[in-house]
Length: 261
Length: 274
Image (cartoon, rainbow over all chains, first blue to last red; front, top):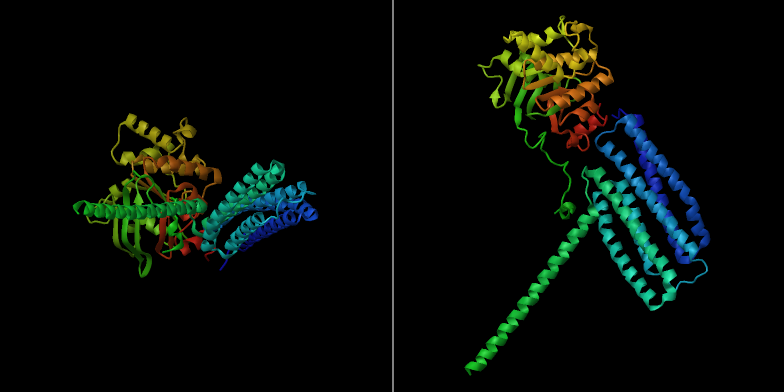
């Protein structure tokens, strides 16, 4: 039996709006990346003007979450949902802002053809967008595993972003006339990396809602991956060491034999 | 291996420890405590530990056994006919239901404050001095000092110091309740039991009592029964949830109110129980 029907409805409505905002910024990001790839200025403009909707929703959700805290005094999971909503909504709003930034860069590149077809940046865009999508899906599904997966994906985004940065730097060194365009593309890559970080923040909040534990999932995964790689490298070095020792031993044995002969 | 095994936990909230501080020690322990009113079982095999210098809140719906449990801690249930108790309640390791226990001495060590302020119809001074006089304190200076110290401890001294001869019944409800707390403290108890001490008080008086409880925690162990969940969350270190005579869960209040372990607790504190 549900006693607090109106509170229950308000809490559900808050979560629905959060999802609506999540879908909206995910779409904005997709549009911003399409506009960049196709140099579609009208689409880029739409991303910029539509962002007011995301900002209004963000304020609305935050205001209602504060009201729920003050008027309904939620406890336990309800408290975690409301508290996390206040935090998640900020990350979503920032993702929307990054879509706008990317759209603005597209507009600033109007009339310039790209020095090479964009491949890695759209891939990075797809990865970041998928993380936003998956984070909202984990929210709907109450999925701890989904939350972990997004945190793991962040590593992939970081690696690709690093690679892109190096490539763009090389290009700039090779041909300084590319500096303006390459710098702007570098900024896009950096924004996509930030989008992925926001998606990671979101799943850390989802993890908290579902488990009651606050954890820095991406950092934990990153550290675990580094430790694993280090252990693997160490094992490999030791194996090499053993191999070379045994070949030295064989050589000594052979030469000893030589002496004795 | 679970998915989470890659991830060490940073959370402090997951601990099962209910200690108020690392230094506090066990003050009261109930083991397999059951209580019957005639044939009706009101408490079922309660196991609970209450730490020294902590505030433990007992919550749960009406008739769940929380007040009955509270009254077991200073044998107030002895006064009710047809009550049968099994199991053990230890105060600092001593069984309070043992045959040689002096119940008057026990209730001096484990004092009680009730729902409705119940000052004696006498002066403020005499209300506080009543218990110590019974215990043999006769020296006027000693009594005066004791009254002053106790009223200071219960945050009432500033409001009544100029008029100690005034009738206690002329005080406001909140002041009367603090007087009752002072009266309980006057006989120097170790433990103070409070049965819904704020339910008859206005919000400001309630906050004053809550603040007082936080201050008293340094010197006393406090167990409070409350219907006000926000009060339990605000004031207590540990919270126990009772339901149908069972202690469903007892844990750090920070844990109970953000992430309770038992679904029944979650349903109750989120208002989904009914």
